[in-house]
Image 1 (cartoon, rainbow, N blue to C red):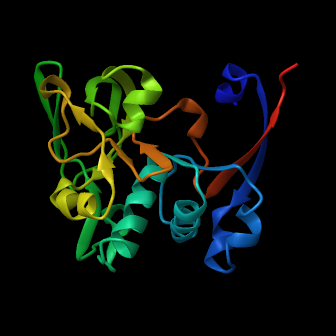
Image 2 (cartoon, rainbow, N blue to C red; image 1 turned 135 degrees about the horizontal axis):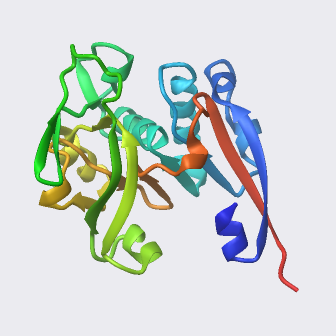
Length: 223
């Protein structure tokens, strides 16, 4: 919606429950839209539907995945581009291919924050703004108009960079690197596929949309 205002365009939003795509082909629901946005969320409900929407979006574009939406997009790419057929998130339980996993430690200010998989997850999110550097020439850097940025985070799971080389070989671009003073030690905060983008920085508007896919159609409002 904010992007529409900035570009003098009216955005018509269709909310679609992603669980529908676990039973039906996403194509009839998505082929008419101009863009697909998968917002943040928690838990396994609707996750496979979001992954199927990601598959459709990769062919159709454009796509924007925020936080959990980014994680599902990377899982989809790992499964269908990199051949990691069992790719999944440890948020859903044990997996032989943890493309997305719990952050175990990161630096905040002058202190090292630590988390443990068997520990209490209450109050354990990585919160607040972090400085980061965007890859020169990336779509993200083009959109921001800069390579040095600061974005807010609200999450506890991240993309596992042990898979980074395999994913980049299949076309994903990891276009953001945390700076040492505010760094997740096993994270990638932004990844893109040509025609799409995704980020783990989380706007407040995505809260509570755990199983929905947000699709948009834009119509010109210029006079």
